[in-house]
Length: 181
Image 1 (cartoon, rainbow, N blue to C red):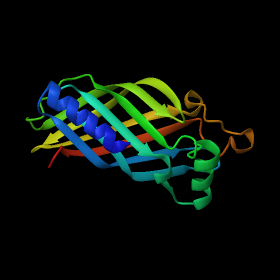
Image 2 (image 1 turned 90 degrees about the vertical axis):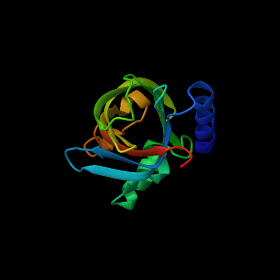
Image 3 (image 1 turned 30 degrees about the vertical axis):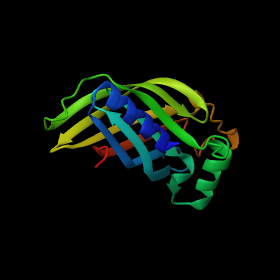
């Protein structure tokens, strides 16, 4: 699936702009839930992303089972009870960076990605703030945003209500290289 997205965006880039396609195969994505009884944290370095600097198009994808927890029981419950990763194996974001950034000029640029966040099979329109950094041809994007479980129909049973927050903090960091390099 991720290869199809990369090929499709590469084709679109060649036909529309002729240049400006960047890819990341190891985006770092973490989640954090602070609750009265226990904090829950997980991380993956398996996110994939494509960014078309000419059009602003941005796509992210991550396999839910790639998130790693300190406690194996947390990981098991996360996949089977909450995110149901057998039914909904991926989370994705498809959108567009609103600002036009000249990726030939070094600097830190605040950006906003507007698009569709799909988690647990539920798509939500989102506006996600971030930072795009250009450093000698390398593009890095970072973002911190919140995801409400209820927005994606992720049920939290009352019995564990004090263990899991209703809103999860997400951190994303992706380092892009020019596609084809």
